[in-house]
Amino acid sequence: MRAPSPTRVDMRAVPAEPDAPDAIRTASRPQDRPGGSTEAPRGAAARARARSRRAGTAGTSPLAARLSRIPRPLRLAAFALAVVLVVTGAWFTGLALWANGRIEHVDALSDMQGTPGTSYLIAGSDRRGGETVADDGTAGERADTMMLLHKAPNGNSYLVSLPRDTLVDIPGHGKYKLNAAYAFGGPALLVETVEGFTGMKVDHFVEIGFDGVSGLVDAVGTVNLCIDQDVDDEKSGLKMTKGCHDTGGEQALAFVRARYFDPTADIGRQQRQQQFVSALMKRVMTPGVLLNPLAQVRLADAGTAALRTDDSTGVIDLARMALTMRTAMNDGTTLTMPIKDPNYHTKKSGVAILTDEDDIKAFFGSIEDGSAKAPAQG
Image: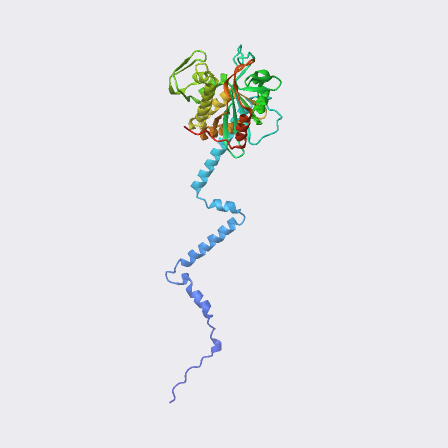
């Protein structure tokens, strides 16, 4: 008996198997595996988030995109700082506008052609009534203190006292003491006289009334003033012992007015007036004044009451002047002009200060171009 032959299978009737790659992909799906892995869903979620971020920032500016990456606490701190700066700027702007409206302006500047740098003529006037300006009998307000402050093109700053008794040529009047120019023609004639004497253009005129010195000092508290002898001067009211003292407004006013107790007379008073200006500037620049809104208002109120300026000078110019003066004080470039004879006798003006024209021309020329040097110490 023959063994049964193997069964023949018709391959055409058997369904074809899926392609191998598809089968592999199907088999690799985590849901088809027991306990399938979550790595693939996580990767898909990350890609989805990336697509979402790209879609969300597609219409955002590069700056906004960069800012969005800054941590939130830093953004809040920056916003708070911006608010503080805006409020501070608005405060100082408002204070400046208010002060500008209170300053008294006078016609003072001449039409002299400009010279290099920026120059300020600072005059301290005494408006006490019933007194004469000088020994020559000229009547009117007194310009007891005159200083020329200059910032040269090279950045150097200089402060020079102009002695009130200096013999000068006053336009339209002849030879008189410098302070007589103010009595004869006010600020305008004083400016013209100083320009003729120094050869320098005056860009800003600032007059400080002595009657306002007390208010300025009281607005900042006190100023530290030093004197080298005990003084009890009835004429000025100055009473100080030798040494340095925190001085209030009334005694500070007497300090800048006093002259008769000092054998150097006008020269000594100039030095004390320069010391007072320096002390006031130092006090104004302290945090107790600069960062105190109440002190700022008091100072602006007292300052505008004490000041008169030319028509073009405002609060911003006064701030620049203060910075220039501070630089001159700190750098030691507070100078004294050359004097030929401090006791020159004249027929019209009595005893005056005589200068040499060539020396004066060279001195102020070096200040104008910034080449003048501070005097050697000691």
